[in-house]
Image 1 (tube, rainbow, N blue to C red):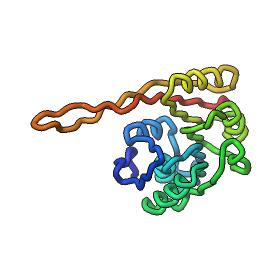
Image 2: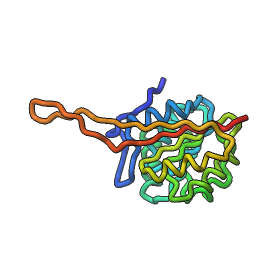
Image 3: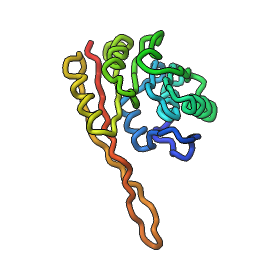
Length: 191
């Protein structure tokens, strides 16, 4: 059985942003991915969430959408490293890169490039009734955009802010070093 929150150091990184282990673990809990699910990861970055999703859905499929060429390479390398042969990498910008996706059970959205509303329109077209969209945000502007974007959609929206402080050693003492706070939203499509 796979447990969520693979150590950050296990991933091949480069200069592409990566969702940290503690946040990844909570995103995966909220995503509630089942073994046969189809998942789309929009703004997949290094593929850390794609890998966690692929391990949670060994009989399913994960579509990792990323526009950054370095990220595309990192997703492929990380998929290979973790033996995730159920990840298909799609190079492009959402929502256009979402064309042709099959019906999904879960859609993860980590980066929108300012296209949140049109990405949500495309996600709604591809998400099965009862399916989940899990979004992460690090700016106050994005959190407000997410709440407004779901105001008139047929979804149940919940959200919370997560602050992680990691223990580090300083001489004979231990201190906590904060990571940037992250907001996690879960939207469940009504049937």
